[in-house]
Length: 277
Image (cartoon, rainbow, N blue to C red; front, side):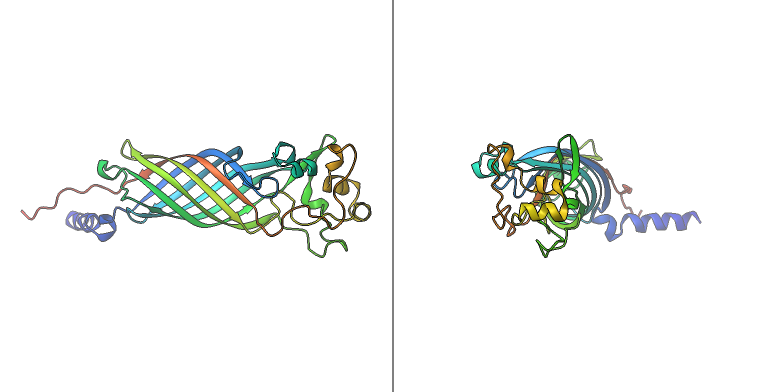
């Protein structure tokens, strides 16, 4: 019996799977989150809120890994903070929670083997696919409103043939990172990642203004008030005339994360040297 156990351990230790140093890794991410869209058109490094994540990674080889991650974050933007005069006059704002489930593939530029001094550092690139939920909101007269429910661009009415957008979508993640193995099983890193979403409504802004009187009749006074808030900063004059551009519907929105990762690698069992004596 003991001979069989010994033979099994020997075969396990010297199997191709072991020799490729495959291992599982569990970790967390913390850092900042941001957004690019109709209320932030130019700055890809505008991080405004907090992002946190947990992930499980399978290191397929010293050069590649697969990772599944769950992230909770927030994004926001405000035309009042823009350097663009047109955006300041538009005077829209939003905030949204983001919950993301992502499946990612990492490629290491150098061989990376946790626990080995010669291969304990590498830059890497990643891409994949993610599913996320969002819900753009704003405050008005002391109350918080879900902008999607209001149909601020007339969605779902005769003013706009488009249906109200969903609050879940697919995104394509991509980015770069650095990681360093220390204390044998532990890995620390820095990561910058962007999500190219398949929606233009992270911020509730995409198409054109609709007639304010008609919008009031169909969707209510709150919807009309939040569709065009320009009068608050233009001496009571509204700039949102019907059929004028409210957002840029030719570009989809992005959100992004930047921060530190820390993880623990479950290293393979070290086997004793093989001897035929």
